[in-house]
Image 1 (cartoon, rainbow, N blue to C red):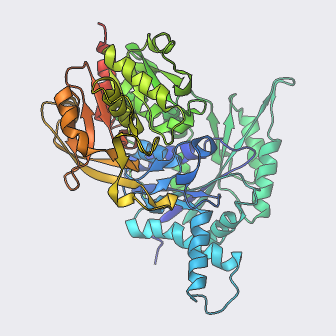
Image 2 (cartoon, rainbow, N blue to C red):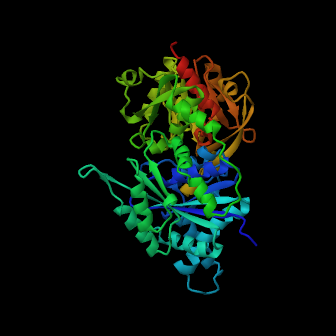
Image 3 (spheres, one colour):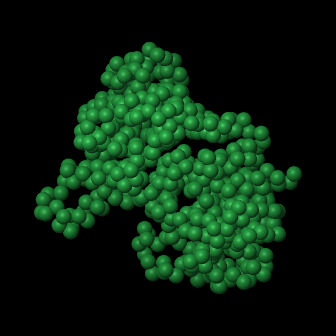
Length: 537
């Protein structure tokens, strides 16, 4: 019986952050555009069960799936490229693997046997890899292994996929190894030795790569490609150049030129399904490269030193900019640096202000100042999660006269808890279990900015938060001019707040950035960018 689901394993060598996630997403996009059903999975070597409790400075953004999994930011790339939702099955961590194995051992599932890395840990890794493909009946599963070959943390994963290749049989799996070919300016040469050594480490672990993707800042000559192919024991046509580009969205087009998809289809013995259909993708990239206008928007947050902390927001602005045929020039502003004396100077040249999500009290007063500036000066404003909560606090203080208004996250005994902990979460101390996570429904009122953006009343958006707007203050806010225009139909929790008299002032409790994709930019981001383009015209 032929293997129904084929598997591609993507490993990295020489250095981290070479772009395994983008290469994986690009290959998936090419295969999808040919008509294959495909998804991507990330294996993360860290021992945290998920990145939910990690500081963004540690690991960048924590991405949330529709089914409520807190995952690696690479899953955001997967969704943005494929326009298909991922799930809890798409992200596996060492923490999850060991948690499952230890739980089985405690229940006596191993019948008294000594529990070891091989076979028990590797078996659980293999089970998780295969489960994704069989459950969803996919043609291809692309599995990206985090870290670098040779890392101690990655060894169980490398061994698991080595075993899996043998179990799947010939023609049912392929290995892509991504490495770096550095350019040494002193000698004026591209050097292949790091790639050779990286492949040698992979071979020592029992894996012969089928395809080598070489990251480079200079074009690779045919002689260099042949040299790499010879010393690394791969076909010459399976040595792929991945040169530096201005935008990650060019990578699928480059990989198509390098015939990466054709090579993988041949390696996997897949039935041909025609050439990739990439007209919409080409149109998007062309707009990115040739915008008709520019607009400067400020992103006010407290992790701005690491742009990856707001990766989905940054990418959502790229999508929304293309939808408006403009380039969004994003100014990252540290909220801790904002004061009453400098806020006008730092925000004065912006056509739109987004106050970012986050946790904790650090930088909160700066975010509130940014909201105040946007509200008083009629600058288009977009608040996401904590950004919406800051808008509520600012309005309570400066319009309703509740000068000590706050969130109970920041000040537990505030006399005006306009943002408060959800009742269901009170008393829970386990950090991993205190949040509303995943997609929830929302009913949007007509004749509002949000309805004008969505063009429909019933929407579904992803959440990641503990605290909510306190409905005890609902009537006071409405009378003063800040209107709740989106509600959860099951709990009556406020999801969207607007100031109708303002140019464009929208705060949302959910995270719209998680569901913005290249071919389906999020309507709120599109409308916000449009409002920014028209500001002061």
